[in-house]
Amino acid sequence: MKRIHSIRGIAVLLLCLALLTPVSGCGRRVILTTGFGHNELMRIGNTSCSAAEYRVYLLDMQKRCELLFGTGIWETPIGESLDEMIREKALSQSSRVKVVLLLAIQDNIMLTTAEESRAEEAAAYYLSHITEEESGYLRITEEELAKMFEEYQLAHKVYKSAGTGFEERFDSYTSTIDYDLNRKLFGSIGLLREGSVTGTPAFSQVFKQFFEVTSENDSAGDR
Image (cartoon, rainbow, N blue to C red; front, side, top):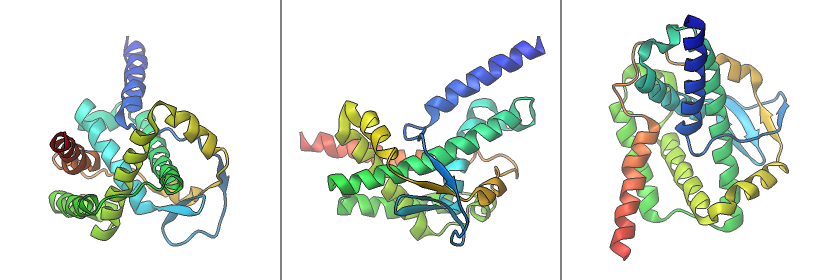
C-alpha cells in the first residue's frame, strides 16, 4: 500500500511541476566547460545566468512545492526525487528565459519606462519581505533582482506576441545555440533547509502582483 501511495505521489508531483512555471522546459544542448566567471552558472549564446538568479527560481519553486505538499515533503520517501526534479526545473526555467530574451532582440521587443519602474519596485518589495535566511541564501542585490523582473516580463511579452507559433519557433532557435553549464557549481546549489519558506512571497507571486495585474488594468484602460 505504501508503495502504491509513493507511486501516486510521484505522479502527482510530476503533474504539479509541469504546471508550476509557464516559462520552463527548455530542451537545451549542454556542453560542459571550464573557465566560467565568478558565480557564473551557465552561458547561453552570448548571454549568461548567475548562481544568484538560479537560486531565485529554485527558491520560488521550493515555496510553491511546500505550499502544495507541506514543509515536511522533503523528509518523505519522494522528497529526494522532488528535490532533484525542481533543481532541474529551475535550471530549465533559467535557461529558457535567457533564450527568449535573445528572441526579444530579434523581434525588437522592449520594456516600457513604466515596466522598468515596476521591476525596481518589485525588487525592493521582494527583498523587504523575505527573511534574513532567505536573503543570505539568495545573495542577490536589488539591482540584480530588478533585472530579473525586467527579463521575466520581457520574456512574457515575447511569448504573448508570438501566439500559437511560439513553441515551434523556440525549439527551432534553441537548436542553433550552445549551452555551457558549470556542472560543479550547479551541483553545489541545494534547497534552503532552514525552516519553512512559505511565510514570505515567492518571485512569481511578486511578479504577478506588479506586472500581470497591473497589465490587465492598463489594457482595460486602453479600451
